[in-house]
Image (tube, rainbow, N blue to C red; front, top):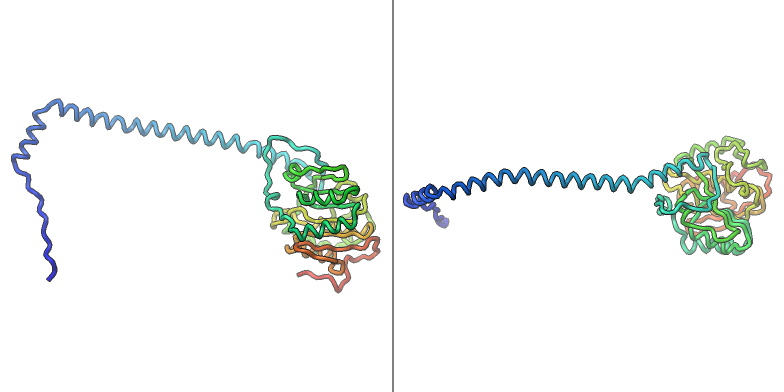
Length: 321
């Protein structure tokens, strides 16, 4: 059998209890007035509290808005200033100082890939064998300054488009110079530029001045010494080229190959060859037949100078993967 459930019955209130409560309430007029006053005070106090809390919330929001506007205005002003600098595709100016007390965007700096010990050893061994020499570097990071120390007595020239890097890294010798450049062609245009170069005779190797070239890949407005000196080593590690909208390295690889063919035998070292743009343009303009070593994400090409060839590579060695 199911267990029995006891039913709960509410206790009945006796008439005497009900009478005594009513009597007590009616026999104390002071208690009634006090209760009404308390009820009235509670109703009045609630809107006052709501009003005070609303005012405090509004004041806090105003304070946050004022603080935010003050903190973002210097960055906006700096961004506007930087956009006005170097307006042409590769216009540049030598940087000797930076404005103090202003925060600078450093997204590209944060995304920059540091060299592994093996990669840096490849570069340092190469510079050690050739020093003192003429060293041109597209890109800038603190590790590369060690190369300028190895190249004591030679010329080391850095070309960089990131103002944050330039402001943070200072050249420490007369033989080392840093120039600011501007790249405006995004990496997503790599394929169309490759087609342009293959179909345009102006992009073929020649002895004509690079500054006067009509090839879309040629960097024509670099510092004069870039075109005047004969480079022993050219390193391509800039611009950053880490996304479709970021400036790509199509022009720097092409320009490096043209500079290498003008002078003596030149080593051209390209970083981040695991990426499509760097791989495509290295095979196209530096050529597999000239690849002498590889380490990590570095490819080292040795380009013979003073060539009269109208081709960058032998037909059977060009490949795009």
